[in-house]
Image (cartoon, rainbow, N blue to C red; front, top):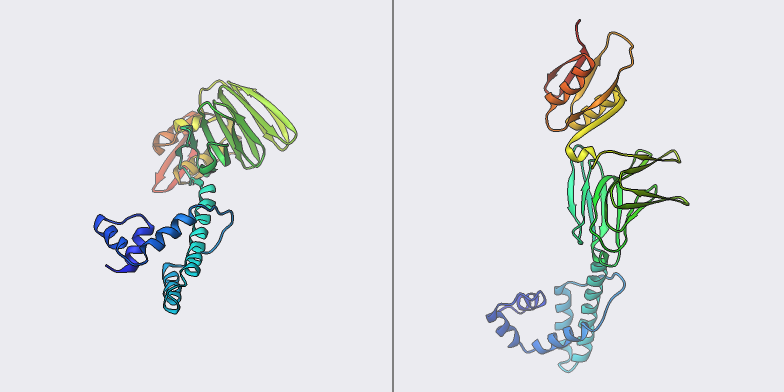
Length: 302
């Protein structure tokens, strides 16, 4: 069998029984095995460039042809290549960064190494180091996510505005558009921002806007977005229509024959445009028409 083929399969531990017999029959098989055994004693700490098998084999052939007794020099050179390879493996294994991103109107459920679950809302980014998870349960978040954390060591969520820390609980974090909001649904949450710390028991939330922090009570058991719902409390019609456009990827043209300010208190679902439009327009005495991705809303005729 071809020597290069056998060595490559041996390096990746993929030799069949027949190939292993052929490999061990090679004149320099014991040399390769000794080199690998010696290289396994080392650990690397820096990045390095590993030469290809072809380049390694070229150097090996040149050295052997010059002197059949120069095995020690050849062995040291090959061993160095193995050590570098092990260094790369060690470094990459120490920095196994898992990263997740969601698009518009997309959510994603992520199961962490300790079986904690993260529900990532739309237009959000989450990442963590899987290799070091057993040592340190730490994540980076941009956007919004709901966390169902298994009990254990400290669990930290870092955002651009502050850090949320727990031991085991359910909570939601929003960190986007200049707003930082943490809602605790179960257990106890610690929020650290600047030089301040706020403790949030279940049923409370903390909002930081323009440097001002407010702690309030909440009555729901989980964020509305987990139920595929958008909920509003005396919100402007413009804000409601903007949310409709985002959730359904449509363009809405609101035609009004007066300058009356309209606010909306209510909700609409995310999985049916017709029902969502009914929820909003009927409550405000408006009508709508749908033409593909274009929606027109106007005052109902009296």
